[in-house]
Length: 106
Image (cartoon, rainbow, N blue to C red; front, side):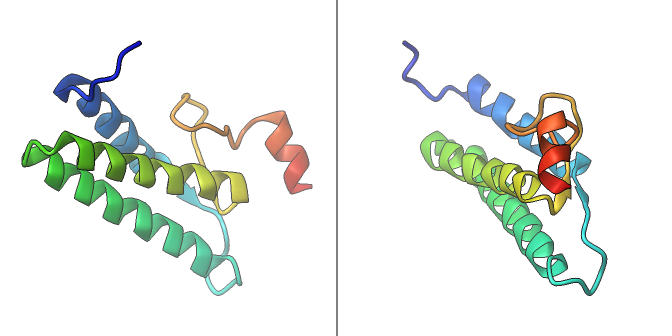
């Protein structure tokens, strides 16, 4: 069991979340009732990611790890809710291109 948050491990999670932020697409049309939710989820993901990077640079790896997990959680939740489209590159817990997700949206 590995119970340490190392710089290398945290760098991996920061990179994964950064790629996720760059790859998601907001789905709801502007002005729809879900557009505000999509925007809020994305804004929270960006804010937590920035916090994670800030604490990483201060070598506060525990706080950085918590923040990056919140950031990625917002991305995963947005995909699950159907307000984000995520790539099928294994970046997210829930693949928006999966058969299960397509059936859920129908």
